[in-house]
Image (cartoon, rainbow, N blue to C red; front, side):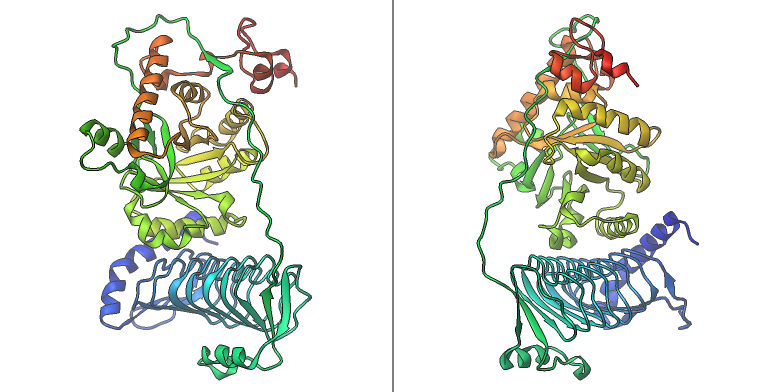
Length: 524
C-alpha cells in the first residue's frame, strides 16, 4: 500500500502537469485522460485525491480508477467524468462544471455547490448536497443520511432510498426522492410533485432512464419562526494581568530592536515576513490598500504587512478558507501569499479528506505558499498533531471558541501541546484573539511560545489601521527595550510574571513577589 505522502505527491504532480494542458485542450476541443497510457492502455488510478480543481470553461477530462476526496472541486466550467469510485467532497464548491461519477461516491457530494450539474450513478454516502446554494445533483442508487442538509437553493434528485433526516436544516431548494423516504425532521415539508414541477425537472434530464415518475415525493423547507443566534460566550480576561520583567539593563530609547517574524520556516516554503508578529484579521484585503494620495509612510506600513483576509487578498496576504467564500477560491487563491483553512467552518474531516482539500488548494495557490490551519483552543492538541502530520506551516488556536477559556489559561494548554506534538517540527504556533492586541500582549504571547498572533483591527479605516500597526510595533519595541532585549526571539517564559493569584493559578506562571509558580503546578 502506498504511503500517504506518496499519494499526495502523485496527486500534486498530476495537477501540475494538467494545468498548462487544460487551456490548450479546451481550445482544441480535446479530451484529456487520466488513468490511461499514451497508447490508450488502462492504468487505473488508486487513491489520488484533490485532482482537477478549478476546471476552466471548455475543459474536458475523463479519469479511470478509484479516486480520493475533493476531486473536481471548485470547478468553473467544463466537464469531468470518472469511470470508477470517488471519495468525499466530489464536485465541492462547484460553479458550473458538469461532473459525472459512473460508480459510487463518498460523503458530502457537491458540498457548497453554487451551480453546475453533478451525477452519481451508483449511490453515495451521507450529507450529499449539503449547504448547496444552487445547481443540480442527480443520484441513482441509495443516498445516506441528511441529504440536502442545510441547502439554500438548487435541486437534488434521488432515484433510490435515502437515509434518516433528509433535508435537515434546509432553507430553500427542493429534494426529489423516487424511493423510500423516512419522515423528514422538523422544519421540512414532504409533499407530492405538481405536474408543472415534474415536467420542469424531467426537462433537465437528457437520460430518459433518469426521469422522475409522478409518484415521487418532494422535500421543501417549511416556514417557521426565525430566531437570531446569540453567538458564543467569550473570554472574560485579557493579558493585562501578565507582566514582563528581566534583570538585564534596559536599552537606550533610540536603540534598534528586532520585531520581525516569519510565517513559514521550512526551506520548501516561500516565507511571509511580518514587521511584527501580528496579522490583522480583516474582511477584505482592499482595506489594507491605501489611496494613492495617502502619505508615503502609510503606503510603506500597509504594503509590507500581511493580513488574514476573507476576500480580495494582496500578494502578501493569507486567504482564510471557510464555508462562506469557498466558491471564490479558484480566483482568489492565485492572488494571495498563503492560505488558512478554518476547520470550524467545515464539517469534521478525517486525514484523507484534509489531504484532499490541501492538494486542491495548493494546486490553485501560488507555488510554495505557506499553509495555515485554524481550530478552537479546546482542540489545540488535535490541531497541533494534525498540522504536524500534514506538514502545515502554522497552527492557529482560536481563543474565542465558546468555551470561555481565558488567554492566560490557554498559555499552558498551548505550551504542553507544542512540546508534545511540534518539538523538532517546522510548524509554528499562533493565537487568534478576541480583542485587538497591544505591544504588551504580543510580547507576552511570544515569550510564552506563540509565534504569530492574529486579531481583528480596532478600527475599519485604512489609514487608522496603519497608525495602529505602527503604534503597536513601537509599543512592542519599547517593551523589549525596557527589559533589555534586542530581539523578540530572545523573549522566554522566564520573563513572564502573573500579577495576581488567579492568573498564576490558571497559567502556571511565576507569581510576582512569590517568584515561582503556585504549588499545585508541581503536583502530579
